[in-house]
Each structure stands twice: as structure tokens, then as C-alpha cells.
Amino acid sequence: MECALGSYPYGDETKMSYFDLLGSIVNKNIPSLPPHFSPEFQDFVSKSLEKNETQRLESYVLSQHAWLTKYDSDGNNIKEWLER
View 1 (spheres, rainbow, N blue to C red):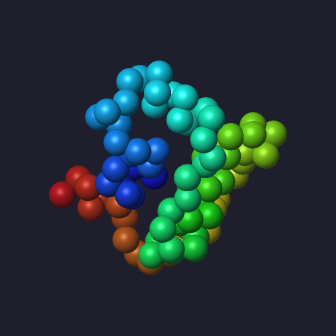
View 2 (cartoon, rainbow, N blue to C red):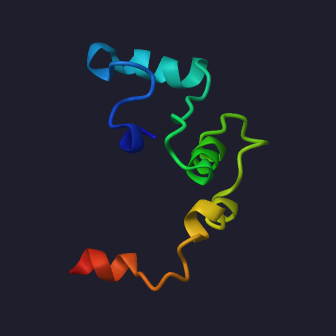
């Protein structure tokens, strides 16, 4: 989420101690992405950040999420592109 937003989602982390940051993650609601992000990406992030471990999807289930698989067959290979 921080990469997508370009900033820490719970406020200015430069003004917070490590324990303040940790407290924000533990005690505050899960942040949501602004509506300009695709619904698939918003859903993937919200499912990835689920705090309740009994409701949080396992990594192998998340790896099959529509946001990750939607471009599987478009002919692009990220690995090859990154190695250029």
C-alpha cells in the first residue's frame, strides 16, 4: 500500500517512533486505497492486509487473485522485461 500511495498510510512516519508506527498498524482500521485504483487492486490489497488471521487468505490463494492473474496471457513477461 505504501508503494501505491507514495506515503505511509497511517500518517507522517517521519514524526512517529517505531512503537507509534507499530501501534497504528495494530490498533487502527485497515487503510483503504483511493477510488482511482482499480477495484481488483483495491480488493487484493484489502484481502492482503486483513488483520484477522482466520479471515486472511493464504498466500497461495492470493497468488490466484484476479489482479495478479489478469495479465497472465497478454504476452508480457515481467522477468524478461526486468532483465533488459
